[in-house]
Length: 68
Image (cartoon, rainbow, N blue to C red; front, side, top):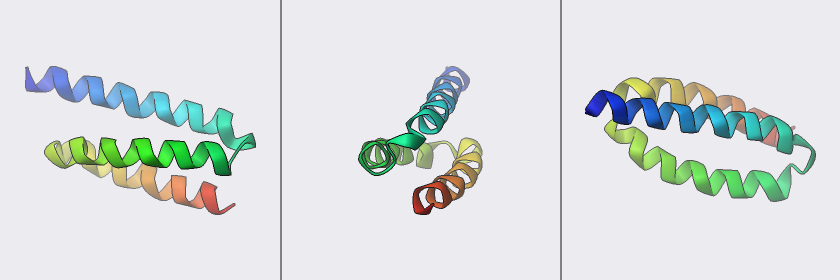
């Protein structure tokens, strides 16, 4: 059961990533909404240590894109 839960969360992150690329044009407004979503995802991530490592990498790329 735990494995199934991890799989669902991973799919959600990948989906958010695709949306980020599409929302690159709207940047500030859209990025703000995505940031709020990520905070919620972060709480779930704390429970999954293995997925957390991937999350940190995505987080760094996201901050870089937001600054640009």
